[in-house]
Image (cartoon, rainbow, N blue to C red):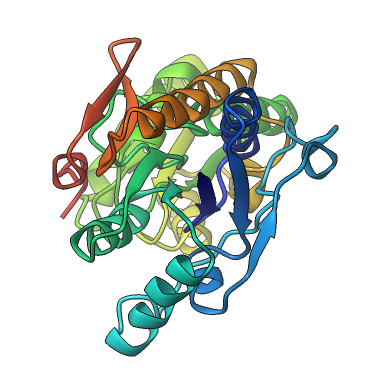
Length: 303
């Protein structure tokens, strides 16, 4: 038997732990494991490599993806999709494991419908699939909270306010969880929010408590630099904007993401050996559960 694994979309801390879990189970059951370099584009371009222990040694607890990630504009175009299917078959791949977010799952649906045996594993900091948790979310949340804590240590010396851009695309899970961890009630996920009302509320609390306020902004909702300028004008004290960028999903994965990643990877192989495929495997209420691909694509998103 031959299994292949790829990582698609944006990288997510814990992806390498998933790969190591898959590899360990494959070693136990004498299954050959191959990696596809560069996500779905790697399927199209026939970039298959045999995964050995030397490929993973000392690297499976790193962030990012050893197999490289990618968003493929070509994959769902008929000509390229047929080429990807042909490459899977010519490499004698029995089952493909894909790791990623909602775009990755949509690709898995197309593969399943084309007769390919496939299992999806949720790896995205956005937490935008219909599971209680996706791999990488815990690490990203900790990265953001630690970064904002460091920023606030500095700005509290001046009583400056902070506008901080948070990843998540159009899903609010990450920004809402970070807000709870930071004990801030100020989050902006709607571009039509009344900034005058928000500024008055912030100014009132700031004047009474003398605490430097933190406003978290979901990416692509509003320009953070302009927003800091607006708040400076409307509140009467200084504001600074901060774009955390890739620091949010970089670095070594948390212990939780490592443990969960390893478990779900090895469990996926066990299902393959039982000839059970065509679903996503993730966590719900602290248990690993199977869900139809269509069921995992959800509406926990802003419109």
